Amino acid sequence: MNRIILMVLMAISIAVTQGCATYTTPASGVNISSLTDVDIAELMKIEPASGFPARIAVARVQASGYISRTNSGYGSGRYSVVTTRDIEDESDFVKLSSLAMVGGVAPLSRLLLPPELDSIKDLRLSAARLKTDLILIYSIDTAFHVEGTPLGPLSAITLGFLPNKKAFVSSTTSGALIDVRTGFVYGVAEATEREEQRTTIWNSSDAIDEARMDAEKASFKSFVGEFENLWKSTLAQYAAKNGK
Image (cartoon, rainbow, N blue to C red):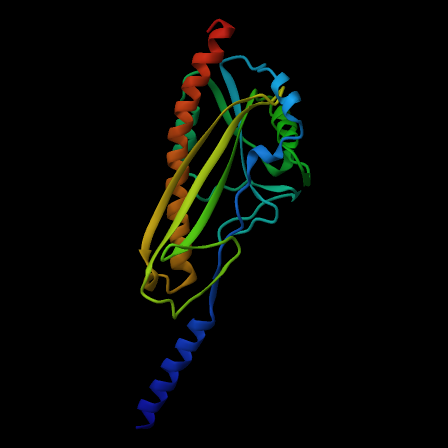
């Protein structure tokens, strides 16, 4: 009898422990257009200056103070830069490098970035140090939903006693291709993917974070496909002006 009571107490203890555990959703992405430091009139005067083939710098930006279970952002100010790849596959960047008229793809490292990040110009200056012509800036915005109710950034999800409801993680990767010399925006691309499960599967932080990772990986891979279309239209419109 004592053994049965002990087992019951242990089960209750485990349940209480799981019920108190939480998973905190990551911070949000960044609206890249909000980082520009010029007004509309000045923006309309900007012209492209890049030649082709072109070398492309790549930077992932997130909200200031961004942190997830697998990564964190560098820098303070209006946004941060994620310099370590966690949801991007090497094959994605090989695909970018193999596009026509791409002279190379180079990630921005922390060594090239200022500690204070306030506008796109900070990234353009870093890209200029790499001697690149263009910079692809992208951001990943991930949202968690339970029965259609969104859970915002930095929300605490209690583990252990979630009801058996439909849940999914949606991830949107959005980016812009920008001229390093002038700040001219050649175009934008965006892709959204989702990972759907039952909340009973979300019984641990690892399980929830795995769903996040799957959604973000799929989103970025789709974004690379959308960027390929953007690159083709960029070449058709601007490379021809350079006699290519």
